[in-house]
Length: 86
Image (tube, rainbow, N blue to C red):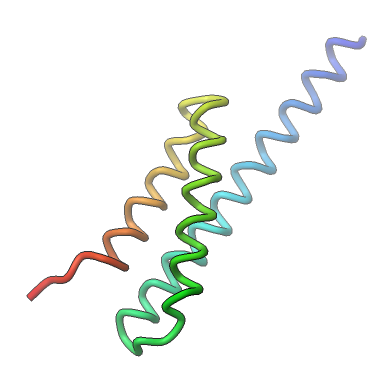
């Protein structure tokens, strides 16, 4: 029974981490797009990208498949924020 409780807690923590990654990832991408269009939220977009990077490191060190979703959000946010297309 104790093993079942640990398994349930682990599953809930993984689901919470996936939800956090999606929320921070979407916020980082949206703020990067807004910065690209209006030149506002410069520091905020960098802070959200840093938070997403930290969350990606934690998720990737736990389970690689869990970190893959965060890594996809991180790469897309960085590309939108920092890469200039002529």
